[in-house]
Every structure is written in structure tokens, then in C-alpha cells.
Length: 134
Image 1: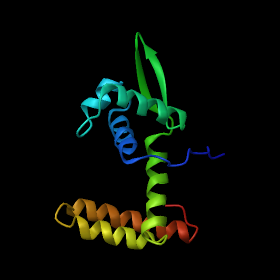
Image 2: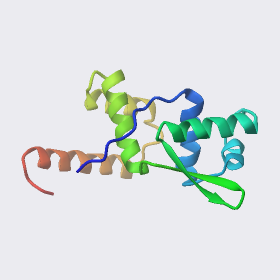
Image 3: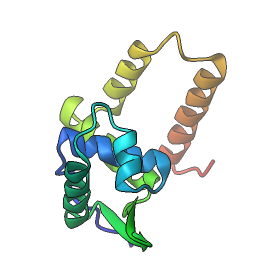
């Protein structure tokens, strides 16, 4: 059964904090602040971490006097959820339009290996659509 994910009701700064925690895997308020652009005060960071925990995006463990925060949703699940929302919101639900935009944004960074991998993934999707397991 698929686990219900918390809604993506986060501000720009909260998204930045979530990004830091996903990159680090787990982090204290000091570590989060040290990885934010133009970081707010330590008190503000702790407040936003508490709010993200109340919203269901984070949990914490105590390590002595410190709280160590980690995401409640695994990175892969969060990635799928966020991308699905972006495709729905900005690309009228069209994965093709989203992929075309990604390819337009970064053609110089794409290696032949990247493009081959994308072609392989597209072929796998075709097979799944036909009901054939790759």
C-alpha cells in the first residue's frame, strides 16, 4: 500500500532547508544554516525546522543537546512527488513537454552516455506500456 505523503505546503526558504537535509541525509540546525544561501538567524532556522516537523516533512532525534533532523519521506519518493507536481502545474501534465524543456536547458551538459541512458529509459517505458516487463 502506498504511504500518504504530506502536502507540499512549503515556502521558498523551507524548500531550501529541505534541500539541505536531503543532500546531507540528516542535519542539525547549525549544519542547515551553514548550507543555506544568506542564512537567517539560528533561531529562525530552528523555528523553520520545527514548522517543517509540524507539517510532517521532518522528524528529529536527540543527540545530546542537539536535535538531528531527517526527512520523513525517502528522497526517491519526494523526487517523484515534486516532479509530478511540477509536470502537472507547469507542463499541463505532459511529461514530454517537461523533458523537452530539460533537454533545451542543458544540451551542453548532456554526455552521449546521458542521452543513451535516456533512450534506454524511453524504450523501457514503451515496453511497460505494451505490458512487457523489460
